[in-house]
Length: 207
Image 1 (cartoon, rainbow, N blue to C red):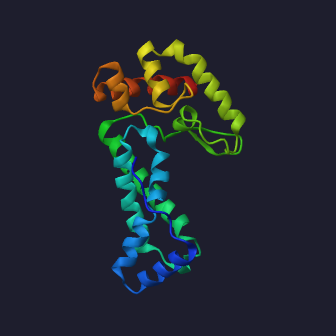
Image 2: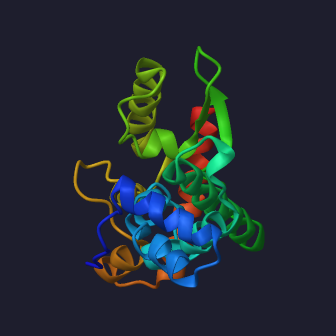
Image 3: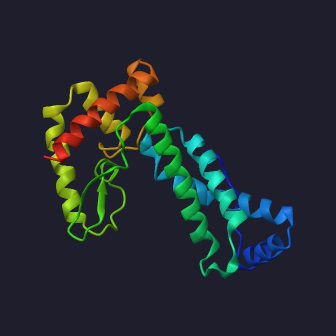
């Protein structure tokens, strides 16, 4: 487990930002190193996208560096709020590029909206960790639908991979590499099976 430095106190962050405005390179390094936990936290949101967590953190770090370079105290936002947005944007751009390269099903492509008009994505249905959503009931119903139809539309191996990848058995989610090792097949084969299964489930959800 990779460990990161503790976040800066409000006073330390203010001092760092002040020194950063004066062009101190060390201040930039401090802001980056002490905000790596933030990057890891945002990257975890995309753990179901089929990428290694370390790769996601590396890409997210690019977004953090951009945040440090472009943040201005007069923006009216806290640095952490601004940094989260930059890290999130960097990860989304990376994942969209990867999906375009592979021609994969998009886990983050909207598949509908709830009654308040909020977009619902496939990853929301398969990876239902956040209970503080605008419309829990609607999402819960879709989750029940997916669970009920999995045995009908997926093969045994497809269902196994989806359950493990998105922690649908109540256990910790597994990476494609971990599943490949358990099944004795290649990671790329697991990726192809997962893609096929997600296509089938997306059709069920959109009916």
